[in-house]
Amino acid sequence: MLRQPPRILLLTLFFWILPALACATTTPNAAPDLDAAAATAAASLPDLDALAGTAAAQVATAAPTIQAAAATEAARAAATAAAAAAALPTLAAQAETVGTLVAELPQGVTLDELKERFAAVQLDENGAFSITITDAEWNQALMARQEARIAAGDPPATQDITFTFFPDRIDLTGRVVSPIQGPLTASFRPYVAAGAFQFEILAATINEVEVPQPLLELAAGSVRETIDELITSLPDGLQLTAVTLQEGAMTITGQRP
Image (cartoon, rainbow, N blue to C red; front, side):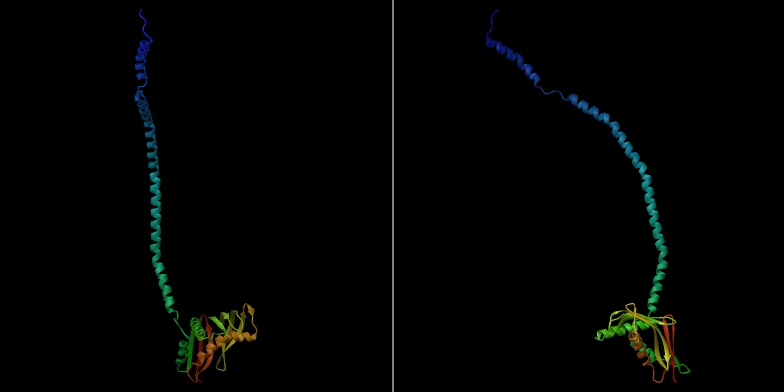
């Protein structure tokens, strides 16, 4: 047997190994992996179907509850609208009543207008007269007088005075600004003596403290000042005979001697 040279043996061995290496480096077949993924997805389909069925069942169960709640709210809104509609006539009637009451209140009564009322009194067949003043008219006249004096730089010692007429007395509330300051309350009883209008001071307080006699005159000052102006507006030759009180009104009567 002939011996081959070493170089030839090496070449022969290389050509045998080369095909084997080529086969080892070939890309593996991916088909088995794809088949496995498809099998997994197919196995998941029943779970997805069950989940979809559960969601559909929940929607079907919730739908009647939602519809019932919507129906309840709609009924409640309808009832509220019906109640409001039923109340409209009553509210309209109340507004009309309030408007009528406001329209009937004396508007812008001034002391000059009250003086004109006294100056224009009419005597009856016995030569007597009667004039009635409400406390609302009196208060408006006094407020107009106060504003005029303040505008003229001559503010009165008592301000923001409000009178309330009762059958047995006149109550006064307001404030004193001079010579002292503080809230003022007083009660009077008017009467006529010797043809003149007079006041009996029942009580008076300033800052909730009973005031002495000199300050009682201050409390009665605005009342006396106002009534004196009205009385002097009467036609000449008339004199007072009586003054009577009722709830919210004062009536002054007189006659020709």
